[in-house]
Length: 523
Image (cartoon, rainbow, N blue to C red; front, side, top):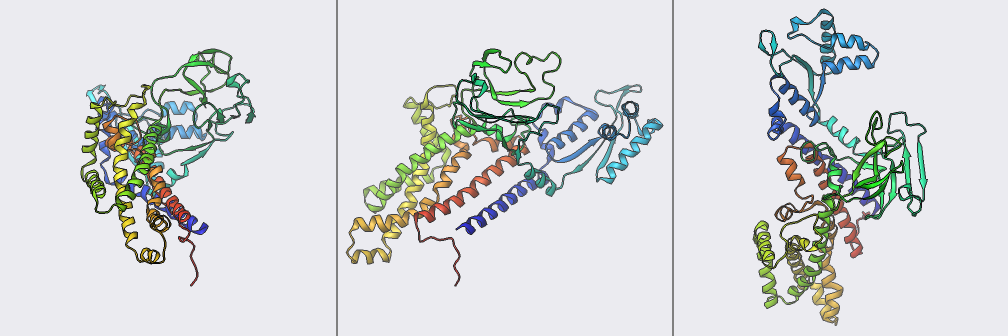
């Protein structure tokens, strides 16, 4: 069993890498990269050479290319000690055309071109665009830069090598004094009176690496981070994992005591404090609150995260589906060809044949007539807004469970071993419980982990109809906005959920039926 699991996990990891690679090929090689500017308001505001440079910079940000400017090259020379800052200032401005460059500038421009060519870059020089013989047009300044397409294998290696990061005491490069970790049983944010274990760091990106609070799941950590990618448009500059897990809704304010001792009503969550270099310099507004540069904090909000809403609705729908679908499936199988079976079959045919959007709208209309909320409001205290989305998700699952359980049970009831058991004197109850139901339930059991984990992925149509702020529409929104970071990140998330579901399904199936073994036997 152990060898089987290790083999399945290895195959799963390879499959995930292949899926992510295929998605990257489709995004970066098969789709027109200019489409990312279709809904970019900034693109229409720039003109002439500035527009061209903006395109290349944006392509770099989205992961299409590596991009370097003449100024970047000179700055690298300064960092390497080849030239000083004065020389940088003298040679950083190029002429309107190549022939207008000063002699000392030509030397460094030639060096830039040779450096780029040697590293596989394509050099582009844009001559100045003149409005009059002596006046440069808006956005028409001369530009010198180079680019190269990023190979797929480098893109994959870079993505997976940064997938999981560990926060260490050397994560911050600034001089922060004595680096190290400290453990306390009484979190200072609670005045040192409340029993609340925490591990804090100095030199780490996060101030709190492990801490407890009153919010589920009560124990939280910032030591390990999963980096699925950064959003470029759906939730600009926010990591995909953060987009899926950050709470939503209105701010929740409460008395907060800052490290300086100042107490005020605020929504700041000090447990999320991240190091921000130079944040206390000059006339910083946080000087009266913080004693070090761990000043960047998230806020407490009234609602759950995208994943939280999707999982809450999904897991309740799954429980409801199994609680109703399994007994009803057994009932229609036992009452084969009778009225109950015909009614159950009619329901199965209806729920499977009618497009999901149609019956969701039907239930929404019926729910509205019954006085149930038909639109999800995060700040509402009413739990009734969960009812219609849960019902809309549960009903097709109930029909599916009824369909397959009925089929499996009828197949088992017509099997030869059942006839032998009956002729051997076993009662119908014993035959049903020990043989028919047990064997028929095996394929159903295999799908339980997938149903539970699938609740994390959300349901696009249901969430869209009822305006649920869940994770279901995240991938669709990213595709519409050409947000490559979110597309790749969510794809990886979905693929991982699928692989894990299959492995857990196999394990659960072997636990239910000891006859199933994944151990290879020598012949």
